[in-house]
Length: 393
Image (tube, rainbow, N blue to C red; front, side):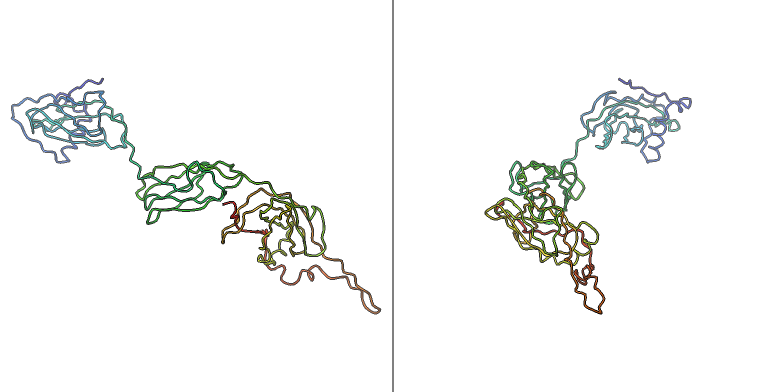
């Protein structure tokens, strides 16, 4: 424990107490009131009675008390700033008290320097100093601004869709984030009324049980109470199978029939990818509206659909999707099927050669495709058979 000590008056000791000198000069510059005592009064040694050296105080606001020379000015510093000043004897002869406050951001380990100005010898500010180490209580964390309440989905619930609707509330003006596996997947600022709502899809790769963490800050930047919501998602159903066209096959013309097997009553989506740049360009001329008719697996567990595409090379896969509900996007219910690669080729044109006529070389591919086929680029033709599967809700 550090002992309390004082500095004797005299010019010879000025440089031995730099903290006291700095404090005394700062007090003078700050306009501290110094009440002159009797000319023949001997200075009284500065004593700090509380807190004791090495003590742990119970609050970050506390009184530093002691005794000294009546009329002298006592100041308390933490080494960088003056925490408070007073005049000895204002309340009781020879007694002084200074209330000091440390912010919550201050370290718990602190060193106080207490200095006294001798009213009978202001030329020597080092009438007495005491240095003591103390420990502050740990900082108290700021109270959270308020809770984030998630009403939907209910924590621990089992859902029937992997496209999940979220709804809840938070303080107006708050910025709220939703995170999955430590990554923010969406965020929103809470408008008047305090409610929020959004929808998130959860790919099969995430597994069947997920936890979404909601966190954020209020309008003043104070943290909100975070909340975790866990729920179980439906596992993927078995993928459909494409039985036609057969991979590696070539079909004459632009018409192609896709067929296969699947789960009775489910809808099928076909994903048709061009295999080269020429096919990609030609595919851009097609109207997507021609491919929106639903494909439904029949009672026998089979499905079939015929489309008119363009000449070129393709690959195709299929997956089960939800049925249509308004304008909502379809939800994948399975992974992808087997992939099939096929070619749509131009028919062979045979020309009859008449006398005195040059032999024709046959129609060109461009003529068969028709003008305008190369106007737009397209990297993917996604044939979505339906929008959302109401029966699985």
